[in-house]
Length: 394
View 1: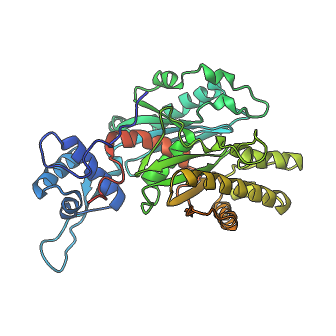
View 2: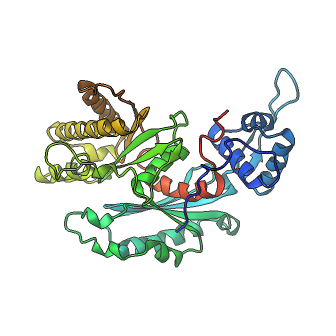
Protein backbone atom coordinates (compact mmCIF):
# COMPACT_ATOMS: atom_id res chain seq x y z
CA UNK A 1 0.00 0.00 0.00
CA UNK A 2 1.26 3.45 -0.85
CA UNK A 3 1.59 5.63 2.25
CA UNK A 4 0.69 9.30 2.28
CA UNK A 5 3.82 11.39 2.61
CA UNK A 6 4.16 13.68 5.58
CA UNK A 7 5.78 17.07 5.56
CA UNK A 8 6.13 17.31 9.31
CA UNK A 9 9.92 17.22 9.12
CA UNK A 10 10.25 19.49 6.08
CA UNK A 11 10.82 23.23 6.16
CA UNK A 12 7.68 25.34 6.33
CA UNK A 13 8.74 27.58 3.47
CA UNK A 14 10.65 27.13 0.24
CA UNK A 15 14.42 26.79 0.22
CA UNK A 16 16.76 28.23 -2.40
CA UNK A 17 19.35 25.54 -1.62
CA UNK A 18 20.17 22.86 -4.16
CA UNK A 19 18.44 19.50 -3.76
CA UNK A 20 15.10 21.10 -2.84
CA UNK A 21 13.55 21.22 -6.29
CA UNK A 22 10.95 18.49 -5.69
CA UNK A 23 9.73 20.09 -2.49
CA UNK A 24 9.71 23.58 -3.98
CA UNK A 25 7.71 22.36 -6.97
CA UNK A 26 5.13 20.85 -4.63
CA UNK A 27 5.06 24.09 -2.67
CA UNK A 28 4.34 26.14 -5.80
CA UNK A 29 1.66 23.73 -7.01
CA UNK A 30 0.00 23.74 -3.59
CA UNK A 31 0.02 27.53 -3.46
CA UNK A 32 -1.54 27.91 -6.90
CA UNK A 33 -4.16 25.27 -6.07
CA UNK A 34 -5.14 27.20 -2.97
CA UNK A 35 -4.93 30.74 -4.32
CA UNK A 36 -5.85 30.36 -7.99
CA UNK A 37 -3.93 32.03 -10.85
CA UNK A 38 -0.88 33.71 -9.32
CA UNK A 39 2.02 35.75 -10.68
CA UNK A 40 5.66 34.74 -10.27
CA UNK A 41 6.31 37.77 -8.08
CA UNK A 42 3.48 36.84 -5.72
CA UNK A 43 4.68 33.23 -5.56
CA UNK A 44 8.17 34.41 -4.64
CA UNK A 45 6.74 36.68 -1.93
CA UNK A 46 4.53 33.98 -0.38
CA UNK A 47 7.07 31.15 -0.51
CA UNK A 48 10.26 33.03 0.36
CA UNK A 49 11.92 31.70 -2.80
CA UNK A 50 14.08 33.93 -4.94
CA UNK A 51 12.69 35.28 -8.20
CA UNK A 52 15.29 33.24 -10.10
CA UNK A 53 14.32 30.00 -8.31
CA UNK A 54 10.63 30.64 -8.97
CA UNK A 55 11.33 31.25 -12.67
CA UNK A 56 13.24 27.96 -12.95
CA UNK A 57 10.45 26.06 -11.18
CA UNK A 58 7.71 27.64 -13.26
CA UNK A 59 9.48 26.87 -16.52
CA UNK A 60 9.95 23.23 -15.47
CA UNK A 61 6.33 22.79 -14.36
CA UNK A 62 5.06 24.46 -17.51
CA UNK A 63 7.25 22.18 -19.65
CA UNK A 64 5.81 19.17 -17.81
CA UNK A 65 2.31 20.38 -18.65
CA UNK A 66 1.31 20.97 -15.01
CA UNK A 67 1.02 24.76 -15.26
CA UNK A 68 -0.10 27.20 -17.95
CA UNK A 69 0.23 30.95 -18.46
CA UNK A 70 -2.74 33.28 -18.61
CA UNK A 71 -3.19 36.61 -20.35
CA UNK A 72 -0.99 39.48 -19.19
CA UNK A 73 -2.56 41.78 -16.61
CA UNK A 74 -1.50 45.42 -16.74
CA UNK A 75 -1.36 47.36 -13.51
CA UNK A 76 -0.86 51.04 -12.81
CA UNK A 77 2.80 50.65 -11.86
CA UNK A 78 5.56 48.40 -13.20
CA UNK A 79 5.61 45.62 -15.74
CA UNK A 80 2.43 43.70 -16.54
CA UNK A 81 2.12 40.43 -14.62
CA UNK A 82 1.29 37.04 -16.08
CA UNK A 83 -0.97 34.87 -13.92
CA UNK A 84 0.03 31.22 -13.77
CA UNK A 85 -2.64 28.57 -13.18
CA UNK A 86 -2.95 24.81 -13.00
CA UNK A 87 -3.32 22.99 -16.30
CA UNK A 88 -6.45 20.87 -15.89
CA UNK A 89 -5.00 18.16 -18.15
CA UNK A 90 -1.67 18.10 -16.36
CA UNK A 91 -2.64 15.03 -14.34
CA UNK A 92 -5.62 12.80 -13.69
CA UNK A 93 -6.69 10.84 -10.63
CA UNK A 94 -9.04 7.93 -10.00
CA UNK A 95 -11.09 7.59 -6.83
CA UNK A 96 -13.02 4.45 -5.82
CA UNK A 97 -15.52 4.71 -2.97
CA UNK A 98 -16.78 1.46 -1.50
CA UNK A 99 -19.92 2.05 0.55
CA UNK A 100 -22.40 -0.16 2.30
CA UNK A 101 -25.15 0.56 -0.21
CA UNK A 102 -23.24 1.73 -3.29
CA UNK A 103 -19.88 1.82 -5.02
CA UNK A 104 -18.60 4.75 -7.06
CA UNK A 105 -15.65 5.51 -9.32
CA UNK A 106 -14.70 9.03 -10.33
CA UNK A 107 -12.05 10.44 -12.62
CA UNK A 108 -10.82 13.94 -11.79
CA UNK A 109 -8.50 16.31 -13.58
CA UNK A 110 -5.64 18.29 -12.04
CA UNK A 111 -8.00 21.05 -10.91
CA UNK A 112 -10.17 18.55 -9.04
CA UNK A 113 -13.08 18.67 -11.47
CA UNK A 114 -14.91 15.36 -11.88
CA UNK A 115 -14.74 14.42 -15.57
CA UNK A 116 -16.33 10.99 -15.29
CA UNK A 117 -18.56 9.34 -12.67
CA UNK A 118 -19.88 5.77 -12.47
CA UNK A 119 -21.89 4.19 -9.67
CA UNK A 120 -23.83 1.09 -8.77
CA UNK A 121 -26.12 0.27 -5.86
CA UNK A 122 -26.50 -3.05 -4.08
CA UNK A 123 -28.23 -4.50 -1.06
CA UNK A 124 -24.87 -5.03 0.60
CA UNK A 125 -21.23 -4.92 -0.56
CA UNK A 126 -19.30 -8.07 -1.37
CA UNK A 127 -15.76 -8.23 -2.74
CA UNK A 128 -17.07 -9.91 -5.90
CA UNK A 129 -19.65 -7.19 -6.55
CA UNK A 130 -17.17 -4.39 -5.88
CA UNK A 131 -14.46 -5.87 -8.09
CA UNK A 132 -16.86 -6.59 -10.95
CA UNK A 133 -17.91 -2.94 -10.88
CA UNK A 134 -14.32 -1.71 -10.51
CA UNK A 135 -13.10 -3.74 -13.50
CA UNK A 136 -15.83 -2.34 -15.73
CA UNK A 137 -15.72 1.25 -14.46
CA UNK A 138 -11.91 1.51 -14.55
CA UNK A 139 -11.80 0.24 -18.11
CA UNK A 140 -14.46 2.76 -19.19
CA UNK A 141 -12.79 5.65 -17.35
CA UNK A 142 -9.38 5.01 -18.86
CA UNK A 143 -10.87 4.46 -22.32
CA UNK A 144 -12.42 7.95 -22.09
CA UNK A 145 -8.89 9.42 -22.08
CA UNK A 146 -6.45 9.79 -24.95
CA UNK A 147 -3.19 7.86 -24.85
CA UNK A 148 -1.36 11.01 -23.72
CA UNK A 149 -3.92 11.62 -20.98
CA UNK A 150 -3.75 8.00 -19.81
CA UNK A 151 -0.02 8.46 -19.29
CA UNK A 152 -0.85 11.31 -16.91
CA UNK A 153 -3.07 9.25 -14.59
CA UNK A 154 -1.18 9.46 -11.30
CA UNK A 155 -2.89 6.76 -9.27
CA UNK A 156 -6.01 5.15 -7.87
CA UNK A 157 -7.25 6.07 -4.41
CA UNK A 158 -9.69 3.84 -2.53
CA UNK A 159 -11.99 4.97 0.26
CA UNK A 160 -13.74 2.20 2.17
CA UNK A 161 -14.84 1.56 5.75
CA UNK A 162 -12.03 -0.10 7.66
CA UNK A 163 -13.34 -3.22 9.37
CA UNK A 164 -16.38 -3.13 7.08
CA UNK A 165 -17.44 -6.56 8.34
CA UNK A 166 -17.78 -5.29 11.92
CA UNK A 167 -21.00 -3.38 11.14
CA UNK A 168 -23.07 -5.72 9.02
CA UNK A 169 -25.73 -4.39 6.69
CA UNK A 170 -29.09 -6.06 7.33
CA UNK A 171 -29.38 -9.29 5.35
CA UNK A 172 -25.77 -9.29 4.19
CA UNK A 173 -22.75 -11.36 5.21
CA UNK A 174 -19.62 -9.18 4.97
CA UNK A 175 -17.16 -11.65 6.52
CA UNK A 176 -15.39 -12.20 3.16
CA UNK A 177 -13.82 -8.74 3.56
CA UNK A 178 -11.73 -9.96 6.51
CA UNK A 179 -9.40 -11.88 4.21
CA UNK A 180 -9.85 -9.94 0.97
CA UNK A 181 -6.86 -7.86 -0.21
CA UNK A 182 -8.49 -5.13 -2.28
CA UNK A 183 -5.16 -3.43 -2.99
CA UNK A 184 -3.73 -6.55 -4.61
CA UNK A 185 -6.95 -7.18 -6.52
CA UNK A 186 -7.00 -3.66 -7.94
CA UNK A 187 -3.30 -3.86 -8.83
CA UNK A 188 -4.20 -6.71 -11.18
CA UNK A 189 -6.65 -4.42 -13.00
CA UNK A 190 -4.54 -1.28 -13.44
CA UNK A 191 -0.82 -0.59 -13.55
CA UNK A 192 -1.08 2.35 -11.15
CA UNK A 193 -0.12 3.10 -7.55
CA UNK A 194 -3.02 2.17 -5.25
CA UNK A 195 -3.73 4.20 -2.10
CA UNK A 196 -6.08 3.00 0.65
CA UNK A 197 -7.87 5.19 3.22
CA UNK A 198 -10.81 4.89 5.60
CA UNK A 199 -13.86 6.29 3.81
CA UNK A 200 -14.76 9.08 6.21
CA UNK A 201 -11.12 10.03 6.71
CA UNK A 202 -10.96 10.33 2.92
CA UNK A 203 -14.03 12.60 3.02
CA UNK A 204 -12.20 14.77 5.54
CA UNK A 205 -9.19 14.80 3.21
CA UNK A 206 -11.43 16.03 0.39
CA UNK A 207 -12.52 18.89 2.62
CA UNK A 208 -8.85 19.79 3.17
CA UNK A 209 -7.83 19.62 -0.50
CA UNK A 210 -10.95 20.69 -2.38
CA UNK A 211 -13.10 22.45 0.22
CA UNK A 212 -13.14 26.08 1.31
CA UNK A 213 -9.64 27.20 2.32
CA UNK A 214 -10.60 29.41 5.29
CA UNK A 215 -10.62 26.57 7.80
CA UNK A 216 -8.57 26.68 11.01
CA UNK A 217 -5.52 24.48 11.53
CA UNK A 218 -7.35 22.05 13.85
CA UNK A 219 -10.87 20.79 13.32
CA UNK A 220 -13.06 17.77 13.86
CA UNK A 221 -15.09 16.48 10.94
CA UNK A 222 -18.30 14.43 10.93
CA UNK A 223 -19.66 12.72 7.83
CA UNK A 224 -23.25 11.49 7.90
CA UNK A 225 -23.38 8.50 5.58
CA UNK A 226 -25.14 5.16 5.79
CA UNK A 227 -23.06 4.88 8.96
CA UNK A 228 -21.69 8.05 10.55
CA UNK A 229 -17.93 8.52 10.73
CA UNK A 230 -15.43 11.30 10.78
CA UNK A 231 -11.94 12.63 10.48
CA UNK A 232 -9.39 14.51 12.55
CA UNK A 233 -7.28 17.43 11.30
CA UNK A 234 -4.34 18.64 13.38
CA UNK A 235 -1.95 21.38 12.23
CA UNK A 236 -3.72 21.43 8.85
CA UNK A 237 -2.94 17.76 8.21
CA UNK A 238 -5.27 14.79 8.16
CA UNK A 239 -4.33 12.65 11.15
CA UNK A 240 -5.13 8.97 10.59
CA UNK A 241 -3.15 7.37 13.43
CA UNK A 242 -1.07 4.19 13.51
CA UNK A 243 -3.89 1.98 12.20
CA UNK A 244 -5.30 4.54 9.76
CA UNK A 245 -8.54 4.70 11.73
CA UNK A 246 -8.10 7.81 13.88
CA UNK A 247 -11.25 9.88 14.01
CA UNK A 248 -13.45 6.76 14.06
CA UNK A 249 -16.22 8.84 15.54
CA UNK A 250 -18.94 6.34 14.75
CA UNK A 251 -17.50 4.07 17.43
CA UNK A 252 -17.73 6.75 20.12
CA UNK A 253 -19.85 5.48 23.05
CA UNK A 254 -22.86 7.50 24.11
CA UNK A 255 -24.13 8.13 27.63
CA UNK A 256 -26.77 5.82 29.00
CA UNK A 257 -26.77 2.36 27.46
CA UNK A 258 -23.17 1.16 27.60
CA UNK A 259 -23.56 -0.71 24.31
CA UNK A 260 -24.86 2.29 22.36
CA UNK A 261 -22.50 4.09 19.99
CA UNK A 262 -22.80 7.20 17.82
CA UNK A 263 -23.20 4.96 14.75
CA UNK A 264 -26.38 3.50 16.25
CA UNK A 265 -28.08 6.90 16.33
CA UNK A 266 -26.57 9.43 13.93
CA UNK A 267 -26.60 7.31 10.76
CA UNK A 268 -28.76 7.17 7.66
CA UNK A 269 -29.18 3.45 8.39
CA UNK A 270 -31.23 4.44 11.44
CA UNK A 271 -33.44 6.69 9.33
CA UNK A 272 -33.82 3.94 6.72
CA UNK A 273 -34.96 1.56 9.47
CA UNK A 274 -37.57 4.05 10.67
CA UNK A 275 -38.87 4.42 7.12
CA UNK A 276 -39.14 0.67 6.68
CA UNK A 277 -41.06 0.32 9.93
CA UNK A 278 -43.48 2.97 8.71
CA UNK A 279 -43.94 1.19 5.38
CA UNK A 280 -42.09 3.92 3.44
CA UNK A 281 -39.79 3.10 0.53
CA UNK A 282 -36.74 5.21 -0.35
CA UNK A 283 -36.37 5.41 -4.12
CA UNK A 284 -33.49 7.85 -4.56
CA UNK A 285 -29.92 8.33 -3.23
CA UNK A 286 -29.79 10.07 0.13
CA UNK A 287 -28.05 13.04 -1.49
CA UNK A 288 -31.14 13.58 -3.67
CA UNK A 289 -33.83 15.79 -2.08
CA UNK A 290 -36.40 13.35 -3.49
CA UNK A 291 -35.18 10.76 -0.99
CA UNK A 292 -36.37 13.01 1.82
CA UNK A 293 -39.98 13.30 0.68
CA UNK A 294 -41.46 11.71 3.77
CA UNK A 295 -43.33 13.01 6.77
CA UNK A 296 -41.98 15.17 9.56
CA UNK A 297 -43.13 12.51 12.03
CA UNK A 298 -40.17 10.42 10.81
CA UNK A 299 -37.70 13.15 9.88
CA UNK A 300 -37.81 15.33 13.00
CA UNK A 301 -37.26 12.54 15.56
CA UNK A 302 -34.23 11.39 13.53
CA UNK A 303 -32.86 14.93 13.29
CA UNK A 304 -33.30 15.48 17.04
CA UNK A 305 -31.70 12.20 18.12
CA UNK A 306 -28.89 12.56 15.59
CA UNK A 307 -27.97 16.10 16.56
CA UNK A 308 -28.24 15.40 20.28
CA UNK A 309 -25.82 12.49 19.81
CA UNK A 310 -23.49 14.65 17.68
CA UNK A 311 -23.50 17.31 20.40
CA UNK A 312 -22.57 14.69 22.98
CA UNK A 313 -19.69 13.44 20.83
CA UNK A 314 -18.48 17.00 20.23
CA UNK A 315 -18.46 17.78 23.96
CA UNK A 316 -16.40 14.67 24.69
CA UNK A 317 -13.92 15.34 21.89
CA UNK A 318 -13.51 19.01 22.81
CA UNK A 319 -12.52 18.05 26.34
CA UNK A 320 -9.55 16.21 24.85
CA UNK A 321 -8.52 18.55 22.02
CA UNK A 322 -9.34 22.26 22.05
CA UNK A 323 -10.88 22.44 18.57
CA UNK A 324 -11.67 25.79 17.00
CA UNK A 325 -14.18 24.27 14.65
CA UNK A 326 -16.33 21.23 14.03
CA UNK A 327 -17.55 20.58 10.49
CA UNK A 328 -20.59 18.47 9.61
CA UNK A 329 -21.10 17.09 6.12
CA UNK A 330 -22.72 14.05 4.62
CA UNK A 331 -24.51 12.32 1.80
CA UNK A 332 -27.52 14.56 2.35
CA UNK A 333 -29.08 17.55 0.56
CA UNK A 334 -27.76 21.00 1.48
CA UNK A 335 -30.90 21.96 3.40
CA UNK A 336 -30.69 18.82 5.56
CA UNK A 337 -27.02 19.50 6.25
CA UNK A 338 -27.87 23.05 7.33
CA UNK A 339 -30.57 21.73 9.66
CA UNK A 340 -28.16 19.20 11.17
CA UNK A 341 -25.71 22.00 11.97
CA UNK A 342 -28.40 24.33 13.34
CA UNK A 343 -29.91 21.71 15.64
CA UNK A 344 -26.51 20.48 16.87
CA UNK A 345 -25.59 24.09 17.65
CA UNK A 346 -28.75 24.45 19.76
CA UNK A 347 -28.05 21.22 21.65
CA UNK A 348 -24.52 22.43 22.44
CA UNK A 349 -25.74 25.81 23.63
CA UNK A 350 -28.33 24.19 25.90
CA UNK A 351 -25.64 22.33 27.87
CA UNK A 352 -22.42 24.36 28.16
CA UNK A 353 -19.39 22.74 29.78
CA UNK A 354 -17.76 24.75 32.58
CA UNK A 355 -14.08 25.29 31.82
CA UNK A 356 -14.43 24.30 28.16
CA UNK A 357 -14.94 26.63 25.21
CA UNK A 358 -17.18 24.82 22.78
CA UNK A 359 -16.15 25.03 19.12
CA UNK A 360 -17.78 26.82 16.23
CA UNK A 361 -19.98 24.59 14.09
CA UNK A 362 -19.81 24.85 10.31
CA UNK A 363 -21.22 23.00 7.35
CA UNK A 364 -18.85 20.96 5.24
CA UNK A 365 -18.28 22.37 1.76
CA UNK A 366 -17.81 19.25 -0.40
CA UNK A 367 -21.01 17.28 0.13
CA UNK A 368 -22.07 13.86 -1.07
CA UNK A 369 -19.03 13.36 -3.35
CA UNK A 370 -16.61 13.83 -0.45
CA UNK A 371 -15.63 10.17 -0.03
CA UNK A 372 -14.96 9.55 -3.74
CA UNK A 373 -13.18 12.91 -4.11
CA UNK A 374 -11.18 12.11 -1.01
CA UNK A 375 -10.09 8.85 -2.58
CA UNK A 376 -8.96 10.71 -5.71
CA UNK A 377 -7.12 13.22 -3.55
CA UNK A 378 -4.81 10.52 -2.16
CA UNK A 379 -2.57 10.21 -5.25
CA UNK A 380 -2.88 13.96 -5.82
CA UNK A 381 -1.60 14.72 -2.32
CA UNK A 382 1.13 12.10 -2.50
CA UNK A 383 2.50 13.23 -5.85
CA UNK A 384 1.94 16.97 -6.06
CA UNK A 385 1.12 18.71 -2.76
CA UNK A 386 2.59 19.83 0.51
CA UNK A 387 0.35 20.35 3.51
CA UNK A 388 -2.02 23.29 3.40
CA UNK A 389 -0.26 25.13 6.23
CA UNK A 390 3.25 25.17 4.73
CA UNK A 391 2.87 28.49 2.95
CA UNK A 392 0.88 30.14 5.73
CA UNK A 393 3.72 30.19 8.23
CA UNK A 394 5.93 33.19 8.61
